[in-house]
Image (tube, rainbow, N blue to C red; front, side):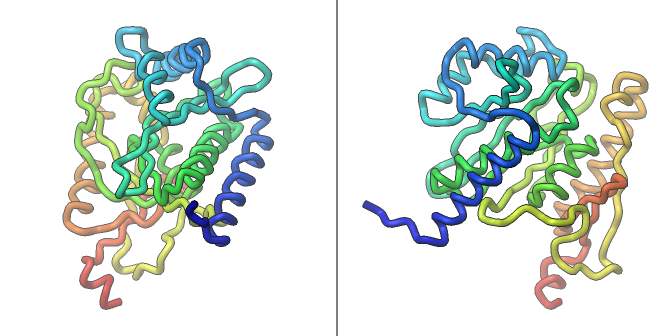
Length: 271
């Protein structure tokens, strides 16, 4: 029997408490689900969030069931008997000790209650108890609230920019725009940031570049898709090209700006 160090055991205990407290503050119960009726409800919830239909569903209930029986968790956030949010993911190759969180969704009617945070913290608790060290996921870098949540609130680290990662997506959130995504990595043993939005490390002000994102890219895609596509290309250049050249995204400000440290890795090491 492998003995778990006391420090690691305490991290797992603290993560479980963080998850329970977040669920309590949101007024929901987050629980692991595995039956087809509940998993079908998750599929329908995702279809409502992304405003799609069965032919373009983000995930099917039978695939969720396959993930569950192979040891990967699906979590639902419930208020009474009503499903108000869900998330799922899967384990990366064992040597990486990484859990990849693929889809999390909360309907518009339940947003503003930090249900997404409660779901993410429950995933974190599960991953730590399964001896994972990191969690990865992708998000649309043009959606301001997601950037603030992932970078400022959780403290996840952007590691790679993907241009049109998933190809054409048949839903009302992504339709008619390229599926550019930012891959982030979250160190699970770290505490949540107390104050979000500023760089975690002390980059030189001379090396910091602020890159703005629109206030509501989803509405813009519906009202002015040409302008939305122009924003996408601008972000691809400002974020993607800079990251490929060695720059790092080190924070996200509440007013809608990415903070980019443009110093090269060698310059950062010397500093």
